[in-house]
Length: 413
Ligand SMILES: Cc1ncc(COP(=O)(O)O)c(C=O)c1O
Image (spheres, rainbow, N blue to C red):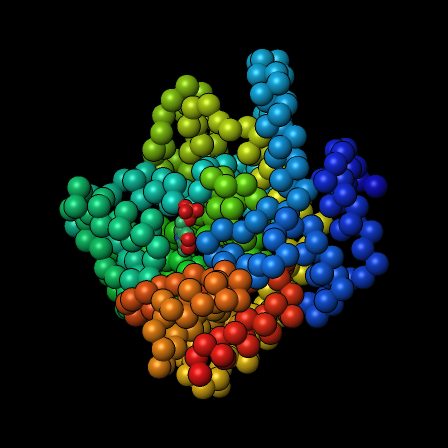
């Protein structure tokens, strides 16, 4: 057994039970192996009568991760001495290294932040830009990567260009062109959402990164809907920065996240919080995480969430999520009264599914799903992304997806 595997077993309680369940599972995590995924589901504290399909917003942490978080919360409160807290620094370094491994980058390129919003805002406010510089965003960027740029533009005279978003995307080239056509010699930043929370478009990040790179343009990727959902290889994508949250698909603690910044680009970003512990000598992306006193147990929980994913294998998580989504979309595609706003093509979509109802108002449908069927999803009440958003994760079963499809059929007809 390797040292890192031995470390996983060091703890008692629910964490140990989770590790044992995942390491001694008699079956393999193939995407269609319901026995395996039912075992995974049992690791989560979700209510029995709830079908939870809102991973794009917040995911539950598994019992083991929760247990590890509580264990260290108690430890911290029981002995807040400097001496006891010394151990948290190497633990944060382990979390950093595991996050880096998940994304195939170097640990010096990872900052442990508080969420995607903060990570993206570090880039928005940290780059040296001058009046007249152009920033390319999309109309479906999350406000943290859309309104934030517009606020900075007002302060510094930047020009924000907003790419239109096809619903659903018809081809990778269409998505690439929607960005490329806005690029001019004055473009300094391209900043998009890897997989949108609005209609689930998966942007061809690698191709867009190549366009940016050829022209020395900073390319930022909002990874809120891909970190922990899809098998993301940032070295392959070759973006300059990437932001994500632990409390979404990573199934970690609330208000924890990360920011990746390519090593060569770190000196080009100003930190947005400077306090005790900051200096020009802080190595690598760590300079973006000096926020004053940290919630150390939360970072331990983030490490546990990364361990949990690693015990299953990110490639298996990705394949299972795609299988759940494909199964669901296949049944919704021709359902009377339903219109899918998400592509059926796995090259153009990830874990987010958006649908609208042709003849029924959305809000009563959303309410009925929760009140009559105990199905928790998200509602976009208006705008071009209006609709019902379904976002399953590895704690969902095919049976739950079928029950959701049946409930939508009943409501839509
Ligand atoms: C694409 C995208 N970016 C950013 C965020 C913000 O995430 P957080 O609230 O964790 O900062 C979200 C939240 O839903 C999102 O969907």
